[in-house]
Image 1: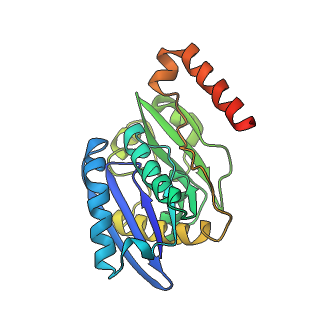
Image 2: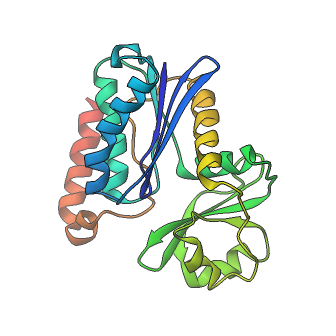
Length: 231
């Protein structure tokens, strides 16, 4: 039984996959601390709903970001925790998840995936059959010159900020929650066919506050980690 999870926004998306059978949950709550309180109980309830026990899990696929720092780390740490028990783990980006959700809803590319970068910025990546360029972060005010009049999609909570700078409307989805869960299931199935990833590395696209405020300490830590890996 494969577990798939996405904690990168204020909404938890969870799925259990066993062959052709799927159990999914979408839990609306606050970011950060709300996720730390809700994730494990929600997982317990979802496993119970599937008539399973944690020992039935055979692997974990997790969204690695970008997203909110705290909420993202909670999801990755949870997946890594399962990995420490011997389960294989796989990761995928939030861009890939949203692009798959659009495909599951029948939307064809090319289109842009726009995610909240906070600080009046946006994370963005253009997709067709796959990503057509590297993911990047830029000020919201510059989106028009990058996106132009091409179709775009952003999460419901972030879309109003994007609409203030782009002339074209957001790609409509009849049921954003259902599309995201369908995308989560499809993507988890696909990535789990490849080699496992360990450790899972969060996809931030932004420096952490520690890196910004303590650059020398961050450089020292990076060098220590590099030497540790080299050994």
